[in-house]
Amino acid sequence: MDSNCFKLTVYFEEPFWVGVFERIQSGKLSVCKVTFGAEPKDYEVWEFVLKNYNQLKFSPSVDVVVKNEVTNPKRLQREARKQSAAAGIGTKSQQALRLQREENKLERKTASREQREAEKQRQFEQKQQKRKEKHRGR
Image (cartoon, rainbow, N blue to C red):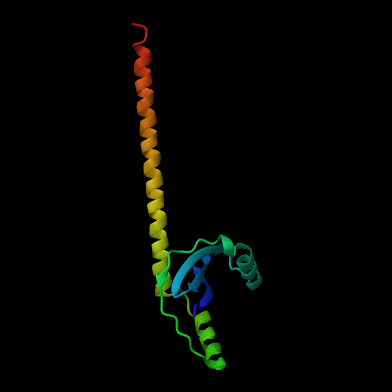
């Protein structure tokens, strides 16, 4: 049975408030990090989720073990309180964010390399054209 789980953690990371969206689908964890800036109110976070969830860029998936257990409602309440008190993100989430950063870094590198090579080629062609124009009259 496929399980879908969605979790949002908002915490203060000097100097901004940051939200980490964690999505578990079919045993795969994907993460997205969003910077809010000033401390967001609950309704602002909810509005952000409703408007921008489809535009979020999640990291590549990481395998994760999902436990399906029926728990006591009081225990759930305690765990929710602990999670809201704890700051930071889980290690699996950090791994997924690291993968996303590395992927973006590679994309930037390839794009800048192509741009550099195109600029070199353009300058070379300009030099060749200039040389041809100089020797045209003789």
